[in-house]
Image (cartoon, rainbow, N blue to C red; front, side):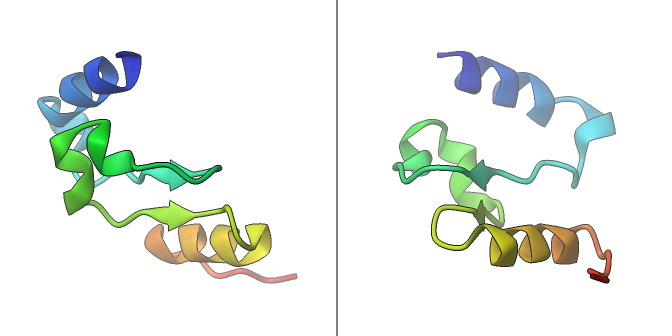
Length: 66
């Protein structure tokens, strides 16, 4: 319920435009949480956390430098 409310609020706020990145920390059917989630690039941390973090940095256009 709260995911739906928070996402609905964020979608109508201009300050969150192009700043919403769904992150999976465990497997789920995230599309069922809210219809709009299927349109976003999702970062999956469930299989490999390090690769997921690198993917998140790529979404933010940041480089990973160990």
